[in-house]
Amino acid sequence: MSCHEIEALQLGLMNVLGVGDQSTRDHAEKELEGHLEGPIEALVEAENLTAIERHLDAALVDLEEEVAGMDTDDPEYDYTRGRLLEVRNAERTIQRLTTQGESIVDGLGESHDMLHETFPVED
Image 1: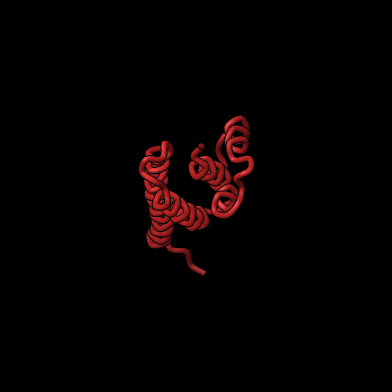
Image 2: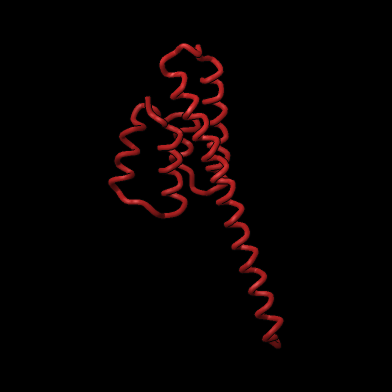
């Protein structure tokens, strides 16, 4: 069993942020072979943080349902619960990243306004 949600999130973030190398991408894509459907596929193809948040939330719901349907004696139960915790953590991380990005955008707007107040431009 693999942590498809995290692999898909990594690929989506590589798209959005324009970072990462081909070997990392190739490894993640190999891990996801045969599992590119629903929120996992959507995460891989995400083009912005809003999409990542939405698809990660959907993947989390699917994973929560998977855990809820498992027998606690299942040998994969603890691993699957661990995946659930990591995906929840990733969701919080993406929310922080989005908040930080919004703060940067707001700060640039404030800098722009202050520059015009300090150095007024006459039309």
